[in-house]
Length: 287
Image (tube, rainbow, N blue to C red; front, top):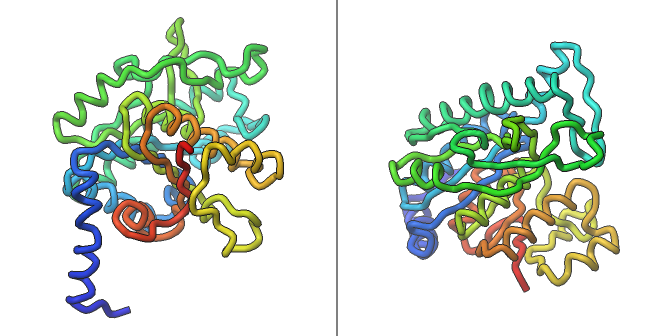
């Protein structure tokens, strides 16, 4: 569709107050889903992140990488088992998870940001003792699936101070230097709280939280923390949306200004959320 010069100018003017409001602020982006696997979407996400940096924001990227891990495990003949959406992670699987997330996926994102004109540094939660972790399951049945014990944001601060975009793989380190595989949503929320971020944006493969998943017009634009328990009981918040909403609740109750669950399948979805009046997806607020 042809966009006139005047329409372009109006778009820029609409973005101006948001650029002003978020200048110098931290925005944590959890990057995953289709936006990581579709080449065209991937490029647009990189462009969004770089644009945010150039207009004075400080994006912090936390990424997943489930499909890539699945592919590598399949190539090596290692079977995956999932319990409540979490990958059971024995020692052999943990080695592959760390190699894929901390190596292949992390560095591909860094390269994508550089290709779009930005500067990025890829790190994992083990670097600088960024993410100290503990087992998520005390029984040991989940293996090296971890949860965030604490976050040391010093390394992220240094990366930002030097003009780079941090790109973080969700690998934590335990008391005995053991690596732990941690859900990227949980890591994003913990980092957003520790960095006193103004926004946490979760890229997903759904439009947001829906009253009726079969009805695209039933999107819940604003979700209050006080409504969450009722929605869970009614089954409106169910399945894979449960941990995402829980992460948003942890973030906003921990001091993050706003959290957003948005559809990463929509081109430039991050810019639409951050820079336009309408926004997209579901915003979770601490009310």
